[in-house]
Image (tube, rainbow, N blue to C red; front, side, top):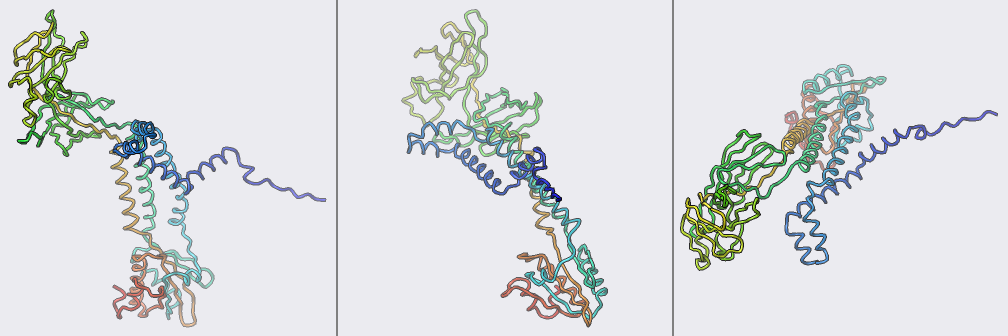
Length: 489
């Protein structure tokens, strides 16, 4: 008795690598997984955005048991985290795989479309037209092809018995518009990964006048502050302040200009914002041996002195000796209370004291004075500027991404793929031509179709039977009810 051999299932014959690749492919092409990924990314963006607001603090105030969680929330920089970069990477890979997954079908539609159709398709189409012509099928086909070709359609035909099938399309390569758009999406995500990994934001970048400070972070940039100008109102509030700066890259000046509030300066991937200004005082400090232990400006205004709380104050640090000298400058704000100005410093004077010393020494500009074992010379007054530095190396990638996305959308929407199917059947008195556009719920596609019908009407001297949706209010209605001669416009 013969035995029938049962071949193993094809899935069992596949190697482990093939099954693994198939699972990965299905994971990245899954619509459900895409929804999960985008939802998770949205949640991360929301968490990262609220981190810079008072919302977490208000939650902790109302629910004290969340204090620890809120503290970790403020401490976690979401947009620079590995989790955020990994999520963007997963979505980028999913877009790449989904795009590749569509290539065969799109290419088949462009290069090898199905020509034959059925009367069932045409009869079921939302919009269709049927001509009864006296011309032979070959003559009618030739005139139809010529009309479509003049309107830039590619015409393909296939004969099945006595019936001729026609497929016409134009702008077929606009289907490729989806690829630059998806490439733009991928670049957008790549730019986000680059920005979150290599970008930074420096909230307080302080520079004294006539000095240069390095931006750091491996950027090779430095900023020199040439001058600070400020204007104050009679009430003592700042009206305008401006920083004149020069940006250096690898030690070479590359850009000069001014920075004002709401008028930042940009160079490459770095943007500099004006935050505030303050005062500086330049000193030279010598020890008992006459050696210079400090020379340069010190910032004033970041501290409050107990004996003169409204005046700008600061410190002179002498790290070799582990000593910090206190400095108090003249109170220049007319809005401050005069009774709190216990020092009553005159222009060109400054107070310097040792830690814990409430008497100190008032020093005249340019005149050395003894402060403890140090000889301190008040050289000059100056200003400093506080900038914010935003560095986003993803910006060039974002610009390229925007170009591809907008270009892809323009190609897709301004050059839509127009398609028409037709069947020419021999009749007793000539030819029956049935046509239908692939333009369901596409007003402009139907308008194109009826424009072709208008040309054919002029050519053949007859109008077709047009089927339109019940109570049609779009172009089919206009065509059916148009006075004679207007349908071809």
